[in-house]
Every structure is written in structure tokens, then in C-alpha cells.
Image 1 (cartoon, one colour):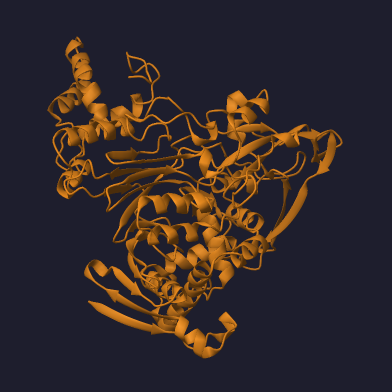
Image 2 (cartoon, helix red, strand yellow):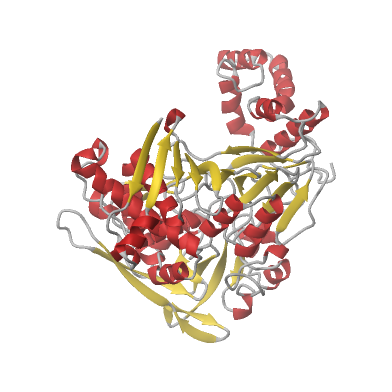
Amino acid sequence: MKRISLVAGCLAALLLAPAAEARSRYEAQITRTTYGIPHIAADSWQGVGYGVAYAYAEDNLCLLAEEFATVAGDRSRHFGPKATAVLGFQEVDNLSSDVFFRAMIDLPALRAGFAGQGRETRGLAQGYVAGYNRFLKDAGPDGIPAECRGKPWVRPISLDDVLRLTEKQMLLASSLALAPGIANASPPGTATKQVAQALPRPGELGLGSNGWAFGGDATADGRGLVIGNPHFPWNGPSRFWQLHVTGPDGYDVMGVGIAGTPIPTLGFNRDVAWTHTVTAARHFTLHALVLDPADPTRYMLDGQSIAMEPRTVSVPMPDGVPDVTRTLYSTRFGPVFVAPDSGVIWSATAAYAMQDANRNNGRAIETWLRIGQARNVGEIKAAVSDTLGIPWVNTIASDRHGDALHADITAVPNVSAQLIAACSTPLSPLFASLATLLDGSRSECDWQTAEGTPEPGLMPASDQAATIVRDYLTNSNDSYWLSNPRLPHPQLSPVLGKHAAALSLRTRSNFTETEALLAAGKVDHARAKAMAFANKSLAADMTIEPLLALCAGAAEPAETIARGCAALRGWDRRYETDSRGAQVFRALWAKIGQRGDLWQVAFDPAD
């Protein structure tokens, strides 16, 4: 066990408070236990942020310092414009990354939003800044890890850096996925880089997860039980980092977070446990613009010609090379973007804008703070509903009272099925599987305003999906429609995902395995763990016998086919480390799994 106590020095200037007050607020104790897991204890929210940032920097300084350079739009200066950055789950050239962040990060808006947040959230962020900077001071030049020692991008940070990084996390499933298309959009006739950008298809963002919440009617002890199986990467800024935080007001939560989060974002306290899965809801809309024939930087709205708002950004280059300057354009619906691989271009007559529900979403930390303080799943539902701060994930939770929750309540555009139908364009059906495309020439096609939402244009929680039961709920990135096969949810707006549509094999597998688990008896920790780690394959269970029949019917199969058939014949249909033949089926399934003619029996939502 390793223990360290941190007390800030003179931080009065940061807090605009007397030094004695600052010193008492910035104090934390970090205890390292098995596997180096940090346990951070503090008597103030500033102290919590202070200790978490210090501990995270101990483990991930170079990664976090590089993230701060990324969101500041400084990668080209430090790493070269042609090298790449990892933005979410895609690689983007540094110049495009820098242009994106310098143009899309609205610091005045983020600062204004921060000023309106609660005392706890502000304290966490202020403490995070102080804790990171304290670690740099304590480490000194020689204490920096070798991979980033002496690098100019390892520097003290300010509150702006934390606000930028939080904004990046909010945009992970929306604007960030189109960063190259936003950064390289320019009017026709201007020289610009040809960008390989397509509208992301469902499942191609690299975001996924499985989650189960069992209620008291299903468990051996009558209490809730949660299985979290998030599919986040093993490296990079989205890698989970485990921590335990004890703070003021009885806050006591163990769980995980990612770079820049000052508290756990998945975890448990003494009363509730929760996990997240990426939602099928869409957090942005596209708007088809009709351009003024006299000027491609003006668009027609309700019969009037409206000037786009230009924003010119300069990106510093390395080695004395002149800055690169680029002008991007924005509309009332958001920035103009291109995705040539999907047919989205900026021509003399048409362009497209993207409106993002998670832009300037500074509410997420407050939401996770309230979840961590919850005593039951009803309070978790209230937290996600009141704030609409969860950016792009389902919330799956259980409590000690035996209630289970699935809430698909996030920051999404308030567009109903009726508005989508009324504002459809001739191209909207072609985009429907990828994004919601609305008519950008009519103001009535903008997002609707509902009472009680924290920001105009967000869909209220009452129009989104939340279910509380006492048996079980599960989600594997399909829509709100089915989180329990016995409880189909009524149809909601199409922006929340497909209704009564074919489910992924992962979802079907989880339903199948969960039903089998419950049929065999009440669920406890050991049985739940065994199910989660069974490494079964529903795809194999459904197709191996027909595949082997094809093998047997082949007259004289080629040697490679014969070897493949033999491998499948001997496979135990699991993905264990000693499962011989698993790799053959995996390669085969990658080729045939998405074929439209694969299944003899068509999908039936009633089956």
C-alpha cells in the first residue's frame, strides 16, 4: 500500500480567494492498493479533482499532456501537420485535427456555461487543473516519463484546457466523427485538400458495449446486480482508468473514467451500480442548404438570402514554417461540412450543415456526480432526465432495493417523426440509414423547443425511453425498442433509433443467454460472471450445422476448403484461447455475416 497526502501551496490567484482558504480546499490523500489502483479521499470537491488529476498524471502523464495539445489545436506545431491524431476511434491528420478544434471549440460559450454550473462541478474542474499542475511541479524535468520528457507540449494547464477536453469527449459520437469533413469544407472554386470522409454508418464508430441490470425478482439475494461489459479501447485517451473516490456529502464511488474526467463515470456506490452502452440514438441532424445563386457562402432561408458566418483560424506550423490559415463557414444550423464518399459536397447550388446536440454540453459531470450520489435507480433516472447531460450512452443500473433501470435518455435533437416527414427533402430517404436530413431552407424545420429542457432544441426526457423493472434489462447498442423481450417499448422519434427492426446477433445472444440463465435459477455473482465470460457464439450455433452440410455435399473440395471444413467440424463453438477452429469461423463470418441473403427465415418483430 502506497499513500501520499497532497496539500496545495499558494493557490489564491487561481481561486481569487485568500491563501488559507485555497490551501484548505486543495487537499487530498491518494492511497494505492493492489494493481496500483488509486483511492482518492478529500473533504472538498476541489480536493477531489486535485487528487484525481494528480493520480491520473502519475499513471498517464504523456497521454494526458498530448490530449491537451490536441484539443488546443497544437498538434501540427509539435508533431507535424501530416502525422495523425486519434480522434475518438479514427485517425485524422494533425492539420485537420487542429483546424477542427480551433474552429469548433467555442471557449466563450464553454466559459459561460461553466460559470452557470453548480459549485461542485466548478470545484472539480478547478481542482483538476491544480492537481495536474502540482504533479508537473513535483515531478520536475527529470521526473517526466522518458516518452515525453523535455517536450514543449508537456506544460501547465488552465481551466480552458479542461473545458476543451471535456468538449471533445462530448462530441465523440457526433461532430468528432466528421472532423475531417468539417475542417476541409470550403466554397466551390477555392483550393482545398481532398478529404476521404464518409457519413459514419451505425456500428462503424468503434463504439460499443454490453450491459445487464438484474432486479430483485431475478437475483438470489433480492437485490440488484449489474454486469458492465464496455467495449472501449485498451490504449489511448478513451482507455478506462480505475479509481475510488471518497468526497464530501457522503460521496463514495468506485469505478472507471477516461482522460479528463474528475470522477468515475461507470461504477457503484453502497446503494446503486451502473454501466453505460453506446446508444443507437442520433445526436445530430443534417440540414440541406439551398444556396444563393449569386454567392455560395449565402443560403436561402424562408425566401431570404442569409450570409454564412465565416471563422478564420490559423494553425502554427513547426520549424519556422508560416502558419496555415483556413476559413470555415457556419449557419444557424451549425458548420458546413463535406463527406464526398457519401455524396455530400459543397457545390454552387447546395451545401450541408451539421447541428450537434452535444456541442457546448457542459452538463455531463453534474449528471455523473448525481448518479454517484444516488440511493436508488429512481434518482439515477431523475439525474439523467433533469440534466440531459449524458452525451451518447444508455444508462443501465440496479439498486439494493431490487429495481433495475434502462434509460436511453441523452442529449438528442428535439425532432419528431411528424417534423421529419414534413421537412424531408428528395435526398432524405437516401440518407435515412446514416443520418436525419432536414430541409435547411425553412426555419420551421429547425429543432423544436420544449419546456423544461436545459438548452433550447433538446428533446425532453419525457419523450425518450426509460424503463424500471424487477427482473432484468439489457442493452447491446440496439435501440430502446427491446431491453427485455417481454417488454417492447412503444415507438418514439426516429432520431432515437429503429423500432421493431432486426436486432444484432450480439443483442439476440444476450437475450438467449440471459433467458437460459434465469431458467436455471436465481442469479448470483458467480453465475452472472460465468455467463458474461462464456465466450459463446450465437452466429456459430445458428450456422455451423448448415455450413458443415455444405462441406459434406461438396464433391471434391479444394485442399484449403477441406482444411477449413475440418477445423469447423472440430471447433467447440466458443472463443476460448484453446478453441481450435475459432479463427476460421471468425474469418468466414467477416465475409458472410452481413449478406442480405444469409437467412432463410425473414425477420419478424413478433417472433
